[in-house]
Amino acid sequence: MSLLGAAEIRELAEALDLKPSKSLGQNFVHDGNVCRKIVRTAGLTETDITLEIGPGLGSLTLAMMEVAQAVVAVEIDSRLATQLPITAAKHSERADILTVINQDALTLKELPVAPTVLIANLPYNVSVPVFLHLLEILPSLRSGVVMVQAEVADRLAAKPNSKEYGIPSVKAAWWADVTGAGSVSRNIFWPQPNVDSKLVGFTRRATPGDEELRKKVFAIIDLAFAQRRKMLRSALSSMYGGSAAAEAHLTKAGIDPTLRGEALDISAFCAIAREE
Image (cartoon, rainbow, N blue to C red; front, top):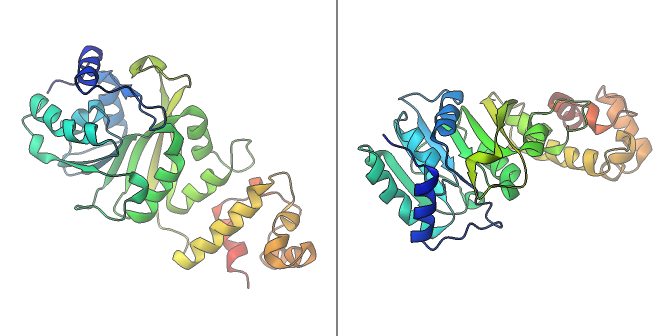
């Protein structure tokens, strides 16, 4: 199967009268070798059903179609969603394994099949909310690799007591183990972005609790990082009726009330939420 190159990317864009949209984070990958590398990094197999968000003109889609049992691509731009099956049929004899859904990924509630692997060049402006949303609504996703802005990748993969550690780091850890998976050059995109990109890999694991606990934990996380220099007893005072009450609650939960949110992992936040 032939993948898309820089010349064909531009030809397709011109034919569609497509001017890449910053608001939709449209930066199209035109390096087939990088696309195949991402697929290998994700560990995609012939039994996997792959989910792609924001397939654009189809560079990464075609690389997935070389391996996967099926590919589901969710594209918000109707022009691109209409063109993608045409491009797939031109480049692949397996065009029938591709399903394209013209929808905003943030409004997804279900899919016609249960995807097992997520591989995507996520739009920069919504990468974190889309990533967390997919982990929440699609328990069938067991692993994946996403390409995001470098600083976002660092935040998602960050560990406690690092400057990058924050709300995205802890919330993602509710569902999965997240790690950095390498960098990619700006030169592989058209148009070339003004920021660097990195790959993030994840492997799903059992969540620490049910949906009721998750909502409590996430509310605590939001407060703990709202003013990240505050000690927990101060940051959580509004939730527990004052800093003294928050201190007592934290102590009962086995958490040092003088710590800051950046020192706690997901299990510590769960301990706070479980303490009555």
